[in-house]
Length: 429
Image (cartoon, rainbow, N blue to C red; front, side, top):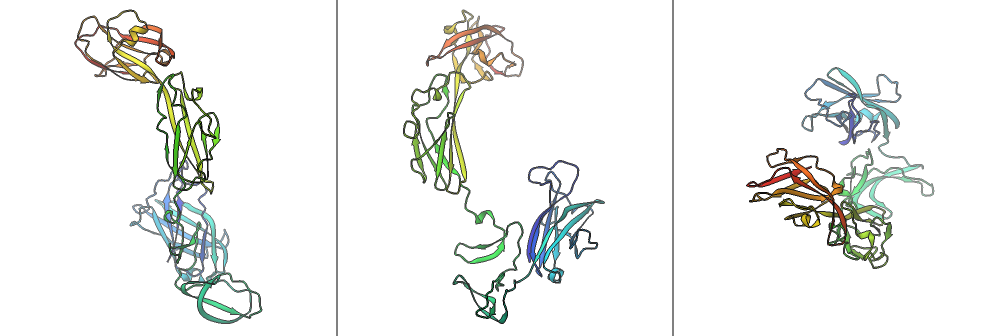
C-alpha cells in the first residue's frame, strides 16, 4: 500500500498564514495498478485544523483526463480518520482503479462539503500515471529470471525480471521491476533510500534522519568581550576560538569596520584567531573598541561556510554603560563631589530600573538619584506599594568625570519630602 500525503485548504475569507501556500495545487505521480491511499489534512488559510469528524462532511476525489470531464474517469469518496486527527481524510484507490487507464498525464481535484458549504479544497492539479515496468526499445527474444546487477555490482541477491534481446540490437532499459521492492511511486521528491550498509530500501520520501545535520557553528568563544563603563576599552587585541560540526572552509570576521577573511586553520575545525595577528589588524588603543556614550556597542560577528557553501554565524557584543548614583543624603551643594558621595552605584544605559534606599535613620535627609542628563526626566516614580513617589529635579547638567577620563553631564533628582524611619524601593520609568 503506497501513501501520498497532501494538504487541503478550506477557504474562510481569512488571510493566508505562514506555511499555507495561496496556491494549493499539488502534483501526484504514481505507478499504474498499485494500491494507493491519498491522505488529505484539511486546514484553513491560517493553518488551523478544520474539523471533519464532528460535523457533517463529505469529500470526493476525482481523476479526469480533461478539466471539463463530468463524471471523471475515477471518483472516490473520502473517509475521515479520527485516530489520526479530526482533520484527516483518506481516499483509497485499488489497483483496478488505474490499471485500465492509459499511461500519461491526467488531472484531479478534491471537493469537500462541510456543514453544507462546498469548496474545492484541492483545485485541479496534475496527476501522472506511469507504467508498472518500462519497455525495451529492441526486439524481445526471451524472458528469464536472473540475479540483478548494476554496473557489475550485485543488488544484494535480489532477483529481477530481465527481458533478453538480440545480441547486436541496440537497446535502452527504462524501468526494471525487482522482486521484493514496493511499486515505484513518488510525490514531492520520493527517492530510493539506502540503509547505512548499502542495502536498497523502499522508495519513500527522505526524512531528517536520512540527512546529515545542517552545518552550524557549535562554539565561538571570546571571554574578553563583556560590557564596559564608558571610556574603558575592550582588552587590547582579543583572541577567539570557534568550532563547527563540519570543517569550516572559509570564514570572515566583522567588528563593524568591515569584513576580514580569516585564513588560519582553514579548512578545519576548531580554528583560532586574534586581533594583532594577520590578517586581523591590531585594535590596541583603537577607537573601534572603546565608546564614550552610554548605550553604544560593538558587535563582533563570525560568519563561517562549509565546503558546500552553507553558512552559520555567531556574535559577541559589548555595550558601554555609565554610572548611576543613588542614596540618602542631607541637601547641600549639588556638584560632582555630592553625586559621587551617594552610597550606591550601578552601571546603566538608561534611567529605568529599581533603586533600593535604606532608612536614613536621621532627620533632615532626602533620597537622591543622579544619572546622565541624556537619559531624560523620569516618566513615573513608584514606591514598593505602587504609590506615586514625588521627586523633583534638584540640579541639572552637573559635570562628572569617571575613572577613564570621560566627562558626562548629570541630572540630580531628590525626594520632595524629607525621609526618616522608612526604607524605600523605587521603580523608575
